[in-house]
Length: 395
Image (tube, rainbow, N blue to C red; front, side, top):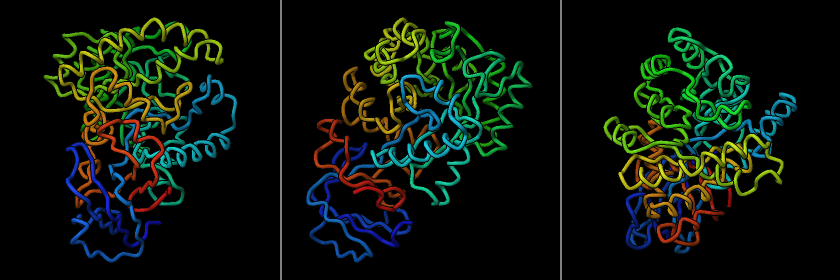
């Protein structure tokens, strides 16, 4: 439980708007930032006080594409198939704790197993376990035999896809995940092949948007990305093969890109020797360059890039958002834009209007850092203190 009140003293503030001049005291009450004042003038009294001593306070990071029931081992699908449900629940809860301690205070889970993501999201909300805020999607919506079929809801035709979306929403989903194409982690060499049609995906989008819930579409080819955008999804997940026409559509419709480029990079660099299935490495290697080209062009064009690392996929822990952000910088972002991608931009995608800035009235999801993340996003790695919804969870 959060302390009734908390003060972070002598802090340098940095967020998606840049650096705040001078040292400030940040007063937190009832889980929110109540006030910010210059340290020289501040007289806040609180139940708990932390002297930041000139360190940087930034918003907690957000991961727009995670899978809390996957273990980030070399073959997470196989592990999930073989472990018991009890093992999955316990290990998933442990991963949530590790994630928030790494400085990631919000995740969107885009495909859980057996409702565990929805159940753990509720447990975190009740304060019974420590973890990031979880916006869970429930079971992925896929065509019969499509990507993720064994953990998803198989649906064919617009009516069936609409019913699948309703099923997830009834269970408490705060996001919907649909499969526009095949994927690398499903056998059969189907990554990038078109799967759900525009009409099918549009039915899920219509149903989710009635409830104010965003929709993300897995898409790993140009045709899949284009189909997803035309169906009205809020975000394209991955985006391999996107081109100039796709970028124009995204800008016109306000569609977000969630690149998950770290996942590709880890799979390719580790390769077969790490124990990653051969078909995954081969498909990833074949498609990776098209993702790099699309991401770089999207950044130049001003597409809204929301940060997600496909956490849970091979060798990518959910909490390793800094590796993802460093790749964004390598491919054309400034550090402040990279920080925005993991805070304000993702908050916009997830429809969280009071998360992602160090500002009175905002939820107190905050990190204390030793160095300036607007000079190097590497400063976000290993925060000294993590505050989640007003409670100190690390440091």
